[in-house]
Image 1 (cartoon, rainbow, N blue to C red):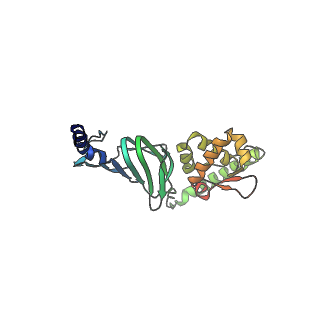
Image 2 (image 1 turned 180 degrees about the vertical axis):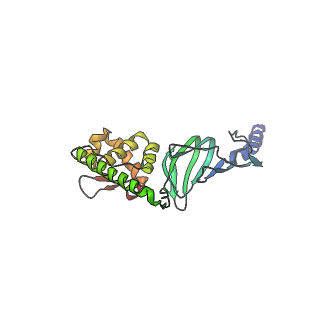
Image 3 (image 1 turned 90 degrees about the horizontal axis):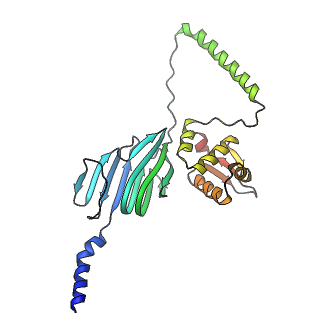
Length: 255
């Protein structure tokens, strides 16, 4: 074996542990936003980490709210990934994923599990709670205030009927939007939010050609948007007829 071949062999053996090394991330998020992270890193990888991390060999573990934030009812998970062969994010079952950047592969079983491979980027995932608001317990009212409450109820009913009569000829009457639906719309991308608003405006269902006209989106952009919304279980598309009908899912309507 020549000198050059021996040098190449020595270099290959020296680099072998680094070539074989992999960097993997595993994040588990609770309903309160607390994140438990386990990172198995390539020894040469530099990571931006919160304080008080525990390191054992090449394995790093920590628990904190460093990666999550909540704005207007929408949760966001953020992480900077210098390089990873595999990234896994586990969210609670009662959360609903709205969007992930970059796009992840995900499955929904007992929990949401999102995965990315060969990633070198910042991750942002938006999600909302799918739990219905808790109805407060009934309060027993004392007798003296009942007449005032009855009068107030009558005034509210009268005002409601007057308002309904004035607006019955309004062609642009829209459905009420619940706080849960509003959270979904806030977390969606602009095209998805536009389509959801138009369907709500049309009483929860609309023809595809009407949606295309009112949204102003190109055929390709609308097709991509509808595919994403259908995949997220926000709309259902009836394709049995020549003109497709798009409707909000029961899950979304019951938020």
